[in-house]
Image 1: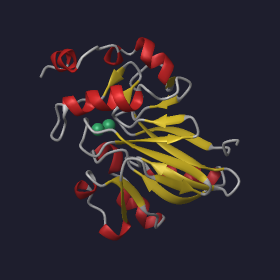
Image 2 (image 1 turned 120 degrees about the horizontal axis):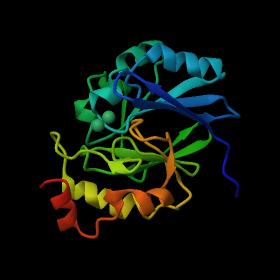
Image 3 (image 1 turned 90 degrees about the horizontal axis):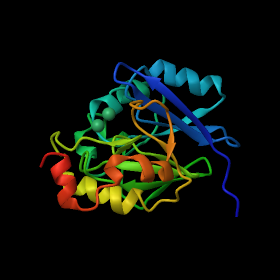
Length: 214
Ligand SMILES: [Zn+2]
Ligand SMILES: [Zn+2]
């Protein structure tokens, strides 16, 4: 069975090198925005210029640099916001707009299935989106780095478990699309990160806790 084609656009927006994504179904011309933290008019323009109607939103976690544009977005497009149930209480948008989700859920954008992986550690409700061989990893996994776990709600042991047991086992060809442009390149693959990301080389939780200073 062949995977449906995908529309994917990576936009670097705002002063913190955030990546905002548009993902969609090229046949139905429906798209979802992922992590609308900044410059909402530019996100809307990009979708419109490419001929896509926004039908959904996702957030990888509740930090302000990933969600700050939600209110403005919802004024322009009344779309459901898919957020992990553990991070949902931190969002200050109308409850009626929120669609709390959990790990293992699949959400359709047009006919494009978006699989949600619960990857706690950076925040309790951090989630990664697995869609057509691509992983949108939010602030959980970066190119050659991983997310901080010393902020409120951060949990180093949970982050280690997410990295080792949820992301490392993914197909090595999976293309990595992180939540920030912190590296020399905007994308990587799970295989490359398994070989070159120092945080994926750490053999035990005890060693990981030592490295992240806990
Ligand atoms: Zn964050
Ligand atoms: Zn961030």
